Length: 396
Image 1 (cartoon, rainbow, N blue to C red):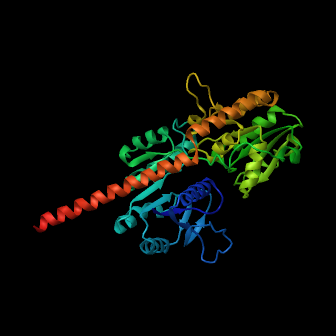
Image 2: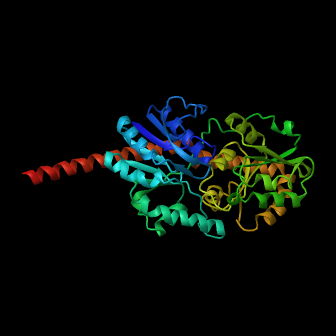
Image 3: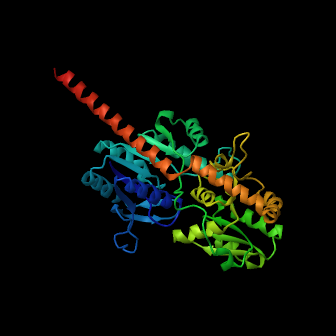
C-alpha cells in the first residue's frame, strides 16, 4: 500500500514524534510512504528519514503548535499527489490553513483522506486554556466531516467531537502507541551524571498549557533536599521567565531540548518519577514512553492521560492521577511520599509497563491503522462501482 503522509518534521514536538514513529513502522511492514512536510526550499540541514520519499511544502512560519503555509503550498501539494498517485492520504493535522483545503484536493483526485487530530483538550473544561482549545475543536468540527475518517485517541475525545456534531461513523479511536522494543527498562548513567539519588523528570514544552510553573512551585515548596533532582527536558516560551526563579539551588536542572532519541531513552530509564502537570492534553507520547521504560508516572486527568493511568476496580491505577486544578498543592503533599518510598515507585513503574504492553504498543496502533486504510480503500472501490453502475443505467 502507498501512503502519502502529510505532517511535520520540525521543530521537535509530539506531532513530529508521531509522524516519525508511524511512518517508520509502516515502512518496516513493507508499505510505501511518501512524506510531505513543511520546509523552505533552501533548507538542506533536515535529516532525511530513510526509506521515505520526501516532498517539501513551502511555508511562512512554523512552530511546535501551528504552521502558516505560503499561498503556493496547496498547488505544490496538489501537483505532488497527482504525481505520486498514493492509495491513501494521511494528514497528521498541523493546525494550518492547509488542513481545511485537503478534503477538496483529495476529493478532486479521488483519494481517501484520513486525519489524525492531535489538538489537546480537557473534557471537563475546568480552566481557561481548555476553553481556548474548545474553540479549536469548534473551528475544526465542521471540516472533519469532509475527511473520510478522523483518528482520535480516546473515547472522551470522541464524545467531545460528537457533541460538536461530528458523526461517529467519521471517527476512529486509535490510541497512540510506543515502540516497546526501544522504550523499555535498561541501563542508564544519568543519575551519576547529575549526582542524584532520586531523579524526577518532566519532558515537554515549557508553555502555559503544560502548567510547568505549578509543578515547579510544588517542587520548590516540598524542599526535596540535595539528593533529589528535577530534570526539565524541553524548551518553550515560558522558560526564560521561569528559569531564574527555579534553579539548581532547589535541585532543578534545565536540560533543554534533547533531539537525540537514544539520550531521551537513557534519561527515562534512569528516572524514578515522571511528572506531567498539563492543563490540556491529547494523549501524551512522552507519558507512554516513560511508562514503557518502567517509570512511576504522575499526570493530570487532562485529555486522555487520566484514562491511560486509570485502572479497573480490582486492578488499581497504573500511575498517580492529579486534578488539573491545584497541582502545586497536590504535589507538595505527594512529592515527599515518592521521595521516601522507592519500593512504591518501583511497583508503579511495573504497573505502567504492563498497561502499555496491554493497550498502547506501536504494533497495535499500526495494525489498527492498516485495517482502517484497507477499509477505506474497499469503501472507495464500492463507491466507484456504484457510480459506474449508475452511469451505465442512465445511458441504457
